[in-house]
Amino acid sequence: MPDRARQASGAAQGTRLGQSRLDPLIAGLSPSATLAINELSADLIAAGRDVIRLGLGQSPFPVPAPVVAALQRHAHEKAYLPVRGLPALRDAFADYLQRTEGLSYDPGLVLVGPGTKELIFLLQLVHAGDLLVPSPSWVSYAPQAAIAGRRVHWLDTRFSQGLRLTAAVLQAHCENNPGRPGLLILNYPCNPTGVTYSAEQLQGIAEVARRFGVVVLSDEIYSGLDFGGHHQSIARYYPEGTIISNGLSKWCGAGGWRIGACAFPEELDWLAQAMATVASETFTAVSAPIQHAAVLAFEGGDEMELYLDRSRCLLKSLMGYAARRLRASGATVAEPQGGFYLFPRFCDTNAHLSGSARPLTSGHLCRELLEQTGVAALPGSDFGRPPEELSLRLAAVHFDGEAALSAMAEFSEGTAPDDEFLRGYCQPTLRGLDLLSDWLDEH
Ligand code: PLP
Image 1 (tube, protein in one colour):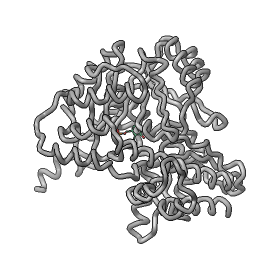
Image 2 (tube, rainbow, N blue to C red):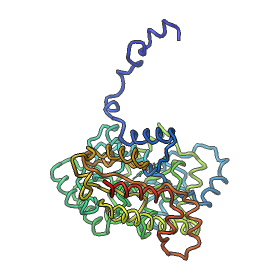
Image 3 (tube, rainbow, N blue to C red):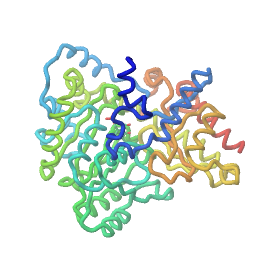
C-alpha cells in the first residue's frame, strides 16, 4: 500500500477503517464459549492430538439415497424460484404436517428458506416483541434476538423436570410482564437436552399461550428423530397461534444443503407476508435443485420410513447407553427421548467438581475436559444456563453413520442394537463417553 494511502487508512491510526460505525447491537455480541472450544480443538488436532468431537450437532447419517437421486435429477434446474418457495415443496410440507400431525396448513402460508436458522431469524426480525425461551435452549435464538434488538427472557426449568418448560412458569412470566406477550420458541426433541413433551404438558403450555396471546414458534427440526416415532406438535393444541418450522438438516442428514420451511396459521399470515418481503430483499429464494430434492424428503415413502426407523432405533440405544454411563459416574441427566444430544450436569457426587478445585464455569469445565481427555463438548452457559453450573452439551455424533445404518439392516425391524453393536459401530463416540466417565470417576 502506498504511504499516503496507508496514513489515510484507519489501520495506521490504531483503528480499522470505519470501526466506530459498527452497529452497537452487533458490537454488543461476544464470541461464544463454543468458539473457544472449537479453536482449542483445532489447535489440539493440529498438534497431532486425537480429539473426539462431541461438540458440533451435525447428523452422523447420510442423506437418504432417493433424496440424493432427486437432487441429481434436478441439478440442471437454474431458474430463480418464487420467494415463498417451489409450489410443489410448499404442498409437500403442508401434506407432511397433515400426514404426521393431522394439522391443516395452507400451502400458500408456507415459507421456504435457506435453513430454518435463517427463517427463525427473519421471524424475530419482523415480530416486534420479546423473545421467550426455556433455559436451556439452542445457542442461536438469543443472539438472533439481540441482533434484531429484542429483549430475551430466559424461562426457568428444573433438572427434576427434565429441564422442560412448564405451563406454570410461562403463566408467571406472562402475569409479570403484562402487555408484552412475546414470541415463545419451543423446541423438542430438544437441543440441548434430548427431552420431549407429553400431550398434557403441551396442552398446559398451549392453554397459557392462548390466554395471554403469546405467539409460539414450534421448532420441530428434530421431530423425525423422536425415538418413539410419535412426535406431537404443540400446534395440535394451539393451531391459531403456532408457527411450525422444520427442515432437512437433522432427520434427513442434510444440514449442509441449507433448506427449511415454516408453516403459518391464517391468523399469523401477516408474519408470513412480512418475512416473505424481507426474504425477497435478502436471499431471494433457496437454490432450485435443493428445493426439488426436498419435495421427496417431505413426501416420504417406504425407503424414507426405513431410514428414519433405523436412525431412531440406533439413536435410542446410543443415547440410552450414554445417559446410563454418565449417571453411573455421578452426572444428573434427563432421559433422552429424541435427537442426538445429552445435557449432563456434574457436581452432586464428584468430589473434584464440587470441591474447592472445581472448574469455575462450564466453559472452564469443557476446556479441562478437552485438554485432559481429548473429548470436545459445549458449555451449558452457551445454552442459557448460569456459567457456574457445571453442565455441558454432548452431541453423540462422531461415528460413521452410514456404516452403522447399513449394519442395522441385519436387525429385524424394531430390534434395538445392543452395547456390543454400539461398541463396534459408534466409535469414537463410545470411547469419548468412556473417557468422560473415567475422568469423572477419577476426580
Ligand atoms: N433449531 C435447532 C434446535 C437446531 O439445533 C438447529 C441446528 O443446529 C436449527 C434450528 C437450525 O437448523 P437449520 O438452519 O440447519 O435448518
